[in-house]
Image (cartoon, rainbow, N blue to C red; front, side):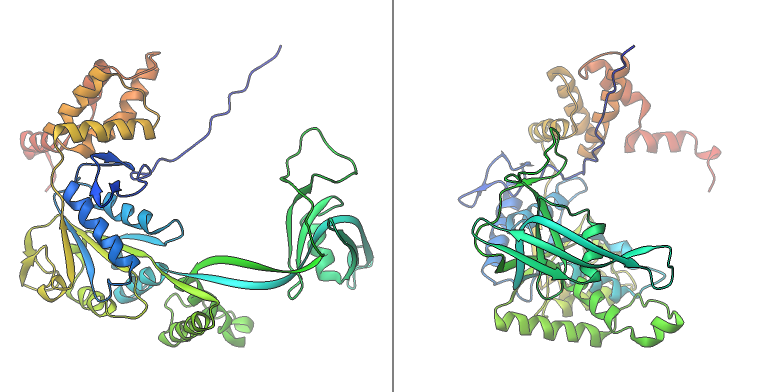
Length: 449
């Protein structure tokens, strides 16, 4: 009896996975574009910010996104990063995350900043490239176990469209060839300096045994000579370089006596990395990509953190710092001083402030359409109108959160799309803030204090 197997793919959909950019045309915001809806003034202001960043004119300044909860502040920050480019680093943290038991507040902020600064490195390296036409690996007895054999050397015949070259390599390369499953017909790169091998794929022109089903990537036979110079471009962050430099400077003590790995990176290590990066930039080997560090719940930062950020904005190597808050006039954490958004006035002076407003009914409906498509939820027009009205009465976030649960109920009933019945049912199962507050007042005496 034949049985059918259904394979379902798991995909986690992020809250802002639909954002592709700011949705601007000639500096003007379109009503619905690139996953962004409404917030016309805020998006156009963000567009000007993007231009300033690209022209290198944002030094010493940051951005503050201020507005009620659920008005697209995080979406605008994500859109700014998308507009700057695909490989622009984007780090998002909440203000409360800096209070760690393992790291100082300033160290958490510094690491987040360094993760937000990319270094695009251009490197020319000599490599041997070609199809493996013939491969011979010589084995020998293990020096400590005569019953086991280990690779001693390798003889590789590489072929391109215009040349054939035979290479002899030592035990380390022979071991790497075996571990990566490289065989005849594979196109490979061998770094002439380090001996590191990269398996590109199976050659289409290979005349040996072929299979009907190929799990490997098929590539054309390389052109030119076997030994050539190739440019490699890759992007790392300053934090990646910090960690690598720190691991190299661990010293013989940690190697022999198992000294613990330091989670905080010393200033002299960071200074060494900065000097190295500046040298690369001066030599034309690298370029700096200022990324975006987004801090949500900025009012949770204290006076020490704000002082650090104020100083950081003036640094030569600084990302674009975007703060977001939904607070009004409130106390600055760690003081008795009240200030707008809970942010010190001297820091506010350094920020370009963009305000967001609540979405209207039409905008909520468009956002629900986008989110239903992103989450693969089918919903009919009548149910969408019902959910839109709920979003107006409660909040956009609550309405968006109801989409997938309603679809679960619909599928249980054998339906292909969400109808008004499922929206009403899910409304009874999950409370919004107003319903939850009403419940607390009704059962106040039964609750623990």
